[in-house]
Image (cartoon, rainbow, N blue to C red; front, side, top):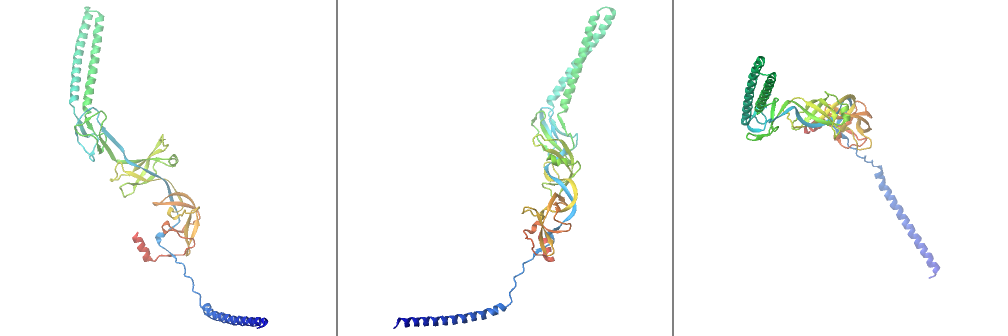
Length: 391
């Protein structure tokens, strides 16, 4: 076959294939367009609305102008204002101890007795020496009287009279010293009977009958629970704003009830090592209070009327503190500037200087993390009641 003719037939075949493919592509596009038209004409399904945050009454607080009590935290051990140790004044064996821990005693009551045998002998010895001195004085006085008569009659010289006068004075001095020794021996014997120096209760019994007590050995401890206080150490800057009589609220270990107190005294000198100042807080009487219990609480320094919210409502997870406020149906972030911190009706609160107005509803910290613009709605009454009951 002629090559030219063969080439022409190949071109005609390729053109026919191209025409057939073009017709097929056009038909496929038409079918695809018809299928897409119903889908385009169908209504577009709307995206689901975001769920609203349900809030109960306990989830919000109201910013209000109220008295903010400024104070300083304190802690210390409860101790009696009046307490005393009954000590042995003489070295002797203990014969008896009449009281035990917890017994009530009154001032002057006999509490213990030491063995007086040795001291009876000392007293008898001193009394005998006093009698001998009194006899010597009698002899010196008779001698003096006789010498005066003899001098008047000229039988002895005045020098002999002066000697008898000196002997009489020495005998009198010896008698006075002997009588003082009797008084000392009598007092030492009386010291063997140990009496209560104050009224109160026995807190410690430190010795038992049969033991030998040295001088100043502790036998018993007495505490007067009618007046109790705690001693606390405060920094000088806190003491500067503190005054005698300021109220205090304290929590004592083991007692569910809050204790009330007041600042009774402020030490005029600072501690040498720590440079702190001791402050004494007197506690109101309570039958459950005991010496040695640990107490912690807060002493009020001053009160001011300011705009406050609880500290738990202020969020500090960013560089600047902020609060979440309910505005309409959304939760809105409000940066705030804070001031004084203190106590409002037993709740730790903080002053809000800027960023809030009185009456604003603020989310508490118990709600957790909430983003700005979150929708909210109130919980149903039944759900709120159930939540309050569970807490």
